[in-house]
Amino acid sequence: MAETFSDANGSLLYAAENGSVEGVKMALKAGADIDYDRVNSEVFSSGTALFLASNRGHVDVVRLLLRKGASVVKRSKSTFAPLHTAAHNGNTEVVDLLVQHGATLEIKDGFQYTPLMTACIYNHVDTVKRLIELGARPDLPDSYIDDMRGNLSTESMQLVQEARKSKLLRCCNPKCGKPGYRKTMKLCGRCKLTRYCSRDCQIQHWSVGHKKCCGHDAYTNDGPSPFFKFFKSMADDLIAQACARAKEL
Image (cartoon, rainbow, N blue to C red):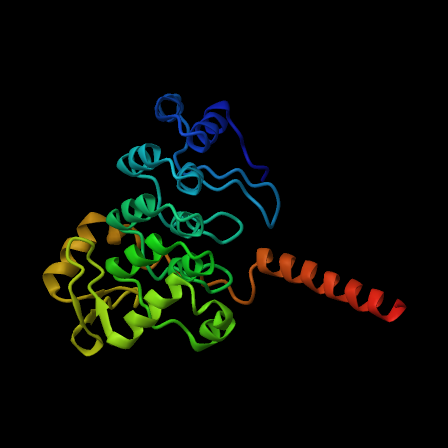
């Protein structure tokens, strides 16, 4: 079935991307789908209004959309959720808002990167620090650490290394953030992605937004995403072209 498109939906995306709170309000009042995502192909889509506002760092628009019930787990075709794109661009205040409304810190994209891993790649120090404070796991996969070996001197990676050495994890309830040893933390039995220092913290986090995310924030598609395969194909072509040119020299 062909995707439908309404002027209200288009206006919502435009307003969100350009930081217009009044434009977002008008589009929603006109009947726009708050989680509308304009699909361009199997690989690309615009992302939802929340995704676009998170990408641009429009804090007031993000706050409004969250208050209106926008999904923090719906991904663009590129497999990125709003928290991924906010971390990618170092929009720390937006990262904080999303987590305060239940966004899962350990959500992974099609490359199996978490928001913390993404923020480290681009050395967004403030964002990395805040993600760790909010409960993001600093014990990143060894394969990622190996890939980042040349960037270990950056402030972001130094923060991660320091947190790793402490062997402490933080409670994922953003109202708490209490540090503790892994064996003392209680893992969410449903999503297996969030940890709490107590039952009370788990209940509180559930009520502020984790209920909507739990079980819906893991990238579970079998095999690489179409987006990943597309870029791998591009990379393979570039490598092949470089090899062919080298043989000609």
